[in-house]
Length: 96
Image (cartoon, rainbow, N blue to C red):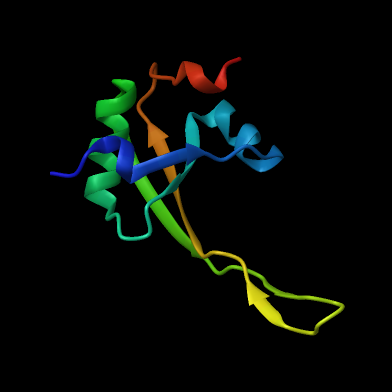
């Protein structure tokens, strides 16, 4: 089994993710190769909560262009996990 800290990289801080906290849904940036069962086990192990459901989405990185040289670059692709917790469980990291 993989180390849970290598599966879940960081929480997503946005207005939309904070709006989902009321319905006990948390959003994390996860490793691109992580599967739903790995994410389920990692969130449960790190925060000690009961995970009901895991939804994932892959986000393509934006292409960028240098104005002076015209070279085209690309931001990194990311994978997000939207995790639904059982009633009564919460993660204190987001409560601050």
